[in-house]
Image 1 (tube, helix red, strand yellow):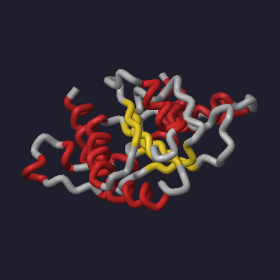
Image 2 (cartoon, rainbow, N blue to C red):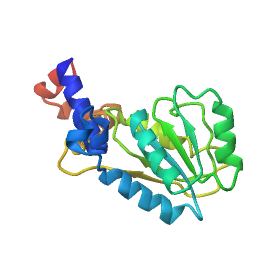
Image 3 (spheres, rainbow, N blue to C red):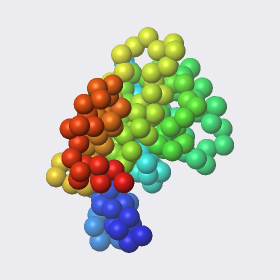
Length: 195
């Protein structure tokens, strides 16, 4: 349990020091928020943008910055009561260019065909969860290309998560491969790692 808490704190540090309980000591700077706001400001006049994070507190920080910049947005977390209205705002209202969504609340059941950019603020251990989030924009009725961007801080736990995702993906591709020779290429240690 302590290891998971430690890994979560490391992930939060990558997002913003303000997510730590001792923010007065650490400050509240966030390279990710600065970069995300730069991207939103550059894209918002011609594109609609989805922003996903696993941490609702991070979405709150982004929301605060959007409010300061007078950028209208829709907002969806597990506590949102008017889910359909938030989707409608993003899909139908031209001035609402940004949709902030918690990864868990927005992973399924949304059809967001107006989106052209998807920003994933923090990587998740399971790439399928991220892919489900990106797929919210890849729906019947989508007429635009969709560009997905992961905001990753180099040389951190986030980069290690991406490496782990790639290893899992490669292993899954090898195991699901139609080529039966894949089993012949696995060593004893590879097979034991699966158990």
